[in-house]
Amino acid sequence: MLSKHDSIQRDQLEMITLDQLVPPNHLVRKMEAAIDFTFIYDLVKDMYSEVGRPSIDPVILVKLTFIQYTFGIRSMRKTIEEVETNMAYRWFLGYGFHDKVPHFSTFGKNYERRFKDTDLFEQIFYRILMTAANKKLISAEHVFVDSTHVKASANKREKL
Image (cartoon, rainbow, N blue to C red; front, side, top):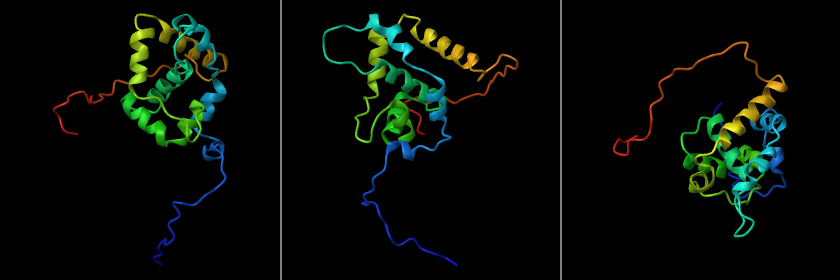
């Protein structure tokens, strides 16, 4: 029998936490439980000034790239769009429902001004790999190489 959903409840008010919206088995929960990202503060403390306006949390910047590469998002602009609407990503970043997400250019500006010509990302990647290996989440027993051709979206004249 064909049924039709007649009651649209877009203005419904509920008392719910962000934590309740992220499924217990979601990958972001597993990443948050497995990796303590606070080591990043020690790595970047000399790259920030003691004066001036407050910066974007460097752990947020790293977690944004983590989201981008883990979930195969092609650009930081698209990553920010996803964070604006995806509650699991907001949860992973520690953002609430109404917290303002950084502009997509923020990562690029921070990279150019602070992180370029450093081995910061290599240090972070190494530390995360070591954490995963110590917790037996990865092993070097089997190595898989993916040589899949991925079409770039860099041509501004080509219509998608």
